[in-house]
Image (tube, rainbow, N blue to C red; front, side, top):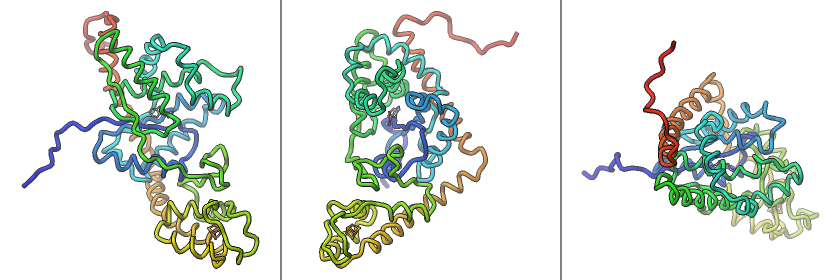
Length: 346
Ligand code: TRP
Ligand code: SF4
């Protein structure tokens, strides 16, 4: 009988999110679904980037802990398996901060200044003169997130590619200067589909207020779907519709594939009322979300479970981090003391 080798080394993958609120359908379609699939063949790590969340939520830092819990519940609800995937919290891995400091010496300001994602984000948020060192430099910290683990693959959306490029540049420079310690990661940009907002905006996003969250109760999902924009030219139900410009139709295409030809046909023929089409979509979405909600609640009810999972994941990440940092310092010639024996309490 042919046995699958269990011992072969699986490539290490790192992805992550800033904990700024619960996750929505756009996250599911764009990344969560992929993560659940990846955990079968790769050694997956997920970073809850709470330090990076400070770049935009400095004054709301008191909410970050709750958001961290929410995000972690969303992971588990969609099927991330804490036994297969390591979920950890950025601020609790001091080795990341340490590595960031070393990396900050390697990165030229001129390079950082040209990062298009930082430019766009700073502009979108109107940061101008308020731009902080931490915001401007978060790609360096992100490079540390990736490299302290020696991750090979980083599944990300297109906007993150400049950060991965920057990471690769840092790794090459480090290894050139000090020897081959770090691993140059690759961005894994699969067909990461983007879910448009309910308002027809290009992207579903909490900040645009156009999102359906994975934890939204059925009635709220329904209400949100009924507010979605459809074909604006359609005044009477018998007017022929243009599904290609309709938000509701875009959602049918993602979540209700098998009914798409029929919906498209009857919409174009003026035989499908938008209210019925929306009612169909909201039931479809609720059918999809029901098991996710149930799983989420089951995890949420087990007091302290999330913190146990994150605590264990963070311990695992730290163990790797402390090894990498020893190697990094050794390579740089910054290793001073004999191997530390367990500390004695005086
Ligand atoms: N910058 C990412 C985002 O906003 C989050 C993130 C932080 C991340 N550290 C990471 C993603 C490391 C991949 C790898 O979505
Ligand atoms: Fe959109 Fe459906 Fe109305 Fe056609 S019937 S315009 S697809 S909501």
